[in-house]
Every structure is written in structure tokens, then in C-alpha cells.
Image 1 (cartoon, each protein chain N blue to C red):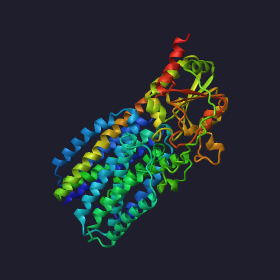
Image 2: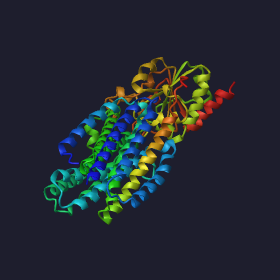
Image 3: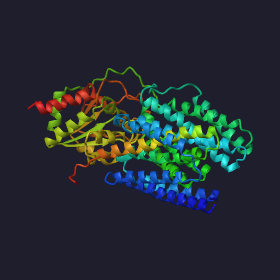
Image 4: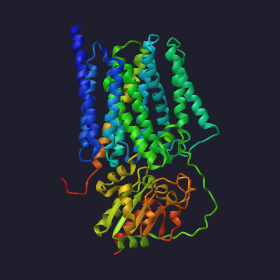
Length: 97
Length: 462
């Protein structure tokens, strides 16, 4: 892949700016669902754990990797699930349907 | 070999799509009308990313499947918790996210050592330090919110010094390891110290500071994932981590502003120092109290009512009774709105979720800055389980520990009614002069029962 360090830092820097811009516009009404959503997205760390387990380089790595997959997957599933439940509850009083 | 390269490119391409979907997902969160698209975008992005990862060359799928199935099994009940338990669930999921990052970081260290270049070792250390402290810190926060652990802050002499020293030990060990990657023994030291540091960091934090702390832990979890992205050279992880990190940091800034603390004050762990313990003996000042019947009569006569909910409403599970009251008053032609202070409750947006759960339309939930100008034209401000966020001492008593904190100006309403169990001070331990004002009526009792009693008066009374 050969992505060098500077490239990665550029990506990080740009992603931070996008993050700040996007999150600033989130209504305070939705701060709780926002947090559970970012939590679910953050659980993308599961891909690192999947590669770790799949490559099977040592028993130790597989054990830690499986626990990591369990922890992250529960965040993915639980995070999206509860965010959806919360957002379903937000209704406007204006007849918009 | 050619085939291998092709699959690598495909994976990178899928990660690119997932990154775009993640950004869109957060963008759509800006308004309740588009927010549910945001979830779809996030979910599709997640599936694309995981599917892409499984394409990696020469994978052994057995244990991956075990992990995915077990994780989903734990995730489903975690997604079904009651809305009142959302703060502790959120803290718990921060802990899980951080656990994943820490474990992967640990495994990567032992796989790669001793051939770890300095930059790699630096980000790896950052990953496990942030991951470790977020893991135990979030577990502590979840325990406090679930009331398994005492909510009261625990402080001792030299606390900050001990914390600083511990953090110093972790950082120094990391620096040493960067310079001497063969000194393997330092790695468990870094992990262990970070885990202990996480516990000690949260011990002195009281319930009222939880919104800031949860946001901050959210930010740390994101940054640790971004560090993991650097270790694995995974751009998707860097982007997701940066998005989560910036989200957590923005929320902590908003929360700390709403409590009149500087951001550095929050970052460097001076949480919960507002424990002024103003347990003075001046309890003799007179207060006016009222019965549910009287309260119902005043509310019926009003044109504009603003309800101010706080953590007490959540504790008493009073939101459904509040909804009943809202319906009854609206039917009588009373204009009822809700004033939401940014730090009301135990996490950002806590009150909004509870009131939405009770089916109160979100356009009736008004932010502090928007509604504060309306209090002088408000007939009744009904405070339910909120205390410090309504304390006028924050505005006019320079000696008060919360002086300068932005508050809801309920005292400017024609009549203030406060539902409260007794005269005990709030979580910050500060007396509230609001209760002694001539236009304030105290409604003593459990929030749920009292609101229920008012609602009964409104229905059965006539």
C-alpha cells in the first residue's frame, strides 16, 4: 500500500476539519443520538481486529483480536440500533406527514 | 501476485466509499428530519467496510465469525435499554470501543516488536494510552451513572499530583520505548498505568459534571481509534477516528461553556472542583409552598408556561406524566414550551431524548439562548427536578462557586413553581436563592407523583 506518513497526517488533518464543520451544525436537540452514532461509527476499529484475527499470526493475537471483535461489534449493532430508536421518537408537532 | 494487488485496490476503494458515507451520516444528523438517513448511510458504510475487510488475502474466517456473532449477541440487548439508561449505556460503549483499540494495539506491539520504527511506536503508545484510560475511565463513569459506584465525587489530598505523576510515568515509558524499541518490559507498564490513570481520573467527578466527562471520553475514544489507524496505515480508521474525536471535543467545549469552565480546565482534569459544600445553617428563611390544586389553578389561568426539566425528572421517570400535563394544558389553550439547558441531565441532549420518548414534539423543546429572552413574558415557569441551572446566584452573586455560569432566567417569570423533594441543595452543593423569592412557590414531593396530581386536578377538577 505504501501510504506514507505525511499522507496519513494530511488525511487526519482534513478529516478533523470536516468533523468540526459537520458536527458544529448538528442541532443540540440531537446531541445524545449524535454521540451514540459516532460511537457506532468509531467501532469501525473492528476492521483492524478482523485483519488481526484473520491473519492468524500468533495465538495471543487471535485471542486479543476475538475479544476486540466482540467489543467493537457490540458497539456497531447496539449503537446503530439505539440511535435509530431514539431518532424515531423525535416528532414535530407540525402536520408534516 | 497480480490478483493480490487487485484485491488490495478493491479494499481501498470500498474504504473510500465507507469514508464518504460516514461523513454524510454525520452531516445528515444536523436536523431531525434527515437524521434517520444518517443512520442508513452509517450502516451501509459499516457493512461495506467490513465486507471489504473480509476480502483480505488469506484470511481464516472461523474466529472472525465467532467474534462477530458474539458481539452482535451482546449488542442487541445494549441497543434495547430504556431511554433513562442511555447515559450509562453510552459510557459503556465508549469502554468497549476503547477496549477494542487497546487490545489490537497490544497484539500489534507483540507481533511487530522489536522492529518498530520511532513514529510507529509513538502512535502505538498513544493508541494504548488513550485506549487504556478511556476503557477504565468509561467503566467508572458507567458505574457512577448506574449508581453501582457512589455518584458523589471522591477527593483526597494531592490527587492532582498523583494523577500527573501517573500520566508522566506512562508518557516517559512511551518515550523510552520509542528510543529503545527492544525494551519490551515498558509496554505492559504503559498499558497498566493508563488503566489505573483512567480510574483515578474519574473518581473525583460528580454527577453534575458527567455531560462534560462523557463528551471528553467520547473524544478520547475517537482519537485512540485514529491513532490505531496510523498504526495499521488504515485511512478509513483515521477518518472515522478523527470524526468521532472532533465530535467529542466539540461537545465537551459546548458543555464546559455551559458550565462556565474553560476548555483547558476541563482537559486537564480539574473536574468536579465546585464542591463548595455550602451547608450553612441559614435554613430559617421562609419559603412559600403550594398544593397540587393550587398549582393546577395557577397553570389553568396562565397563557404562557415554560417547563424546565432537569435530572430530577429523569430520576423520577416523570416524563410521561409531564406529557400528560402538556396535553391537558395545550387543550385548554395554554402555550407550553420546554426550556432545555445544555447540561441538564447526565449527558449532552439527555432531556431532549427523554421528552421525545414521551412524545413531546421537538419543536416545543427550546434551547437556553433562544428562550431566555421570553421569561419576562412568561406567566409560569415550572421547574421539574432542575436546580443549579436555574440558580440566579450564577448571575448576581460573585461569591457563588457557579458565578458566571449561563442559567435559565426562570426567576424573571411572573410565577415560578419548583417541584422538589425537599430543601436540600443540588449536586454542586450550592444553596439556590430562587426558592426564597416572593414569586416562587415550592411544590414539595416526588416529581412523577406531583405532576400526576396536577394532571388529575386538571381533568377531574371541573
